[in-house]
Image (tube, rainbow, N blue to C red):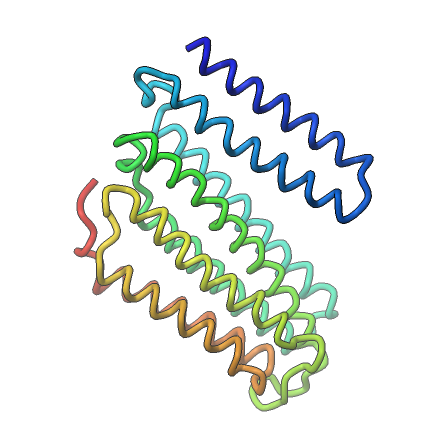
Length: 260
């Protein structure tokens, strides 16, 4: 146990030094220090666990899963806040309000997809699956945060559109980059959350996994081919895709997951 604590302390101390040193570094060296500091803090727990004779004594699986779930709710809350902030900034233009409502529906589906398969069985197997489960959440959280940014860009891009259904896209305000942030983040989220849930002793069924991969591929295609769509229509396609996937998982793929 002493070695475990020593590795953790050394990793945290070195990470803190690197973060503090980044305050004095100019760009782009600043970003290099950030990357190295993050790498050190991620590597330290892995090295610390390796010195334990009984690695699974280092944490309580269900307690950790609860904390990760709470953080997921916090990140989703930030996305909802971005939707509300973007709508308020457009003076409640009808097209922007419609886009915000669709974005909120998409956020609700993101919440449902995550918490419908919350399991901790994989974390109880060995340190490897536990780290896959935990570190895989980094991609989940990043994707959810990016979705909030993409939704806000879509809402702001929809504000000058006179007809939410027929008007052309909002130009530079919702170009390829904005589409990639919105739909691309949802695609990354589906792949990341599928990996995290699959680690849990394969608790995610094959039909659900294939459906999520297909939806993710469709969303990536939408990024490239959706340039003619207005922001409200683009968000509507993303939202209805998520609703369809959620319904499929709830109704048709419910029995595909193994019991915990």
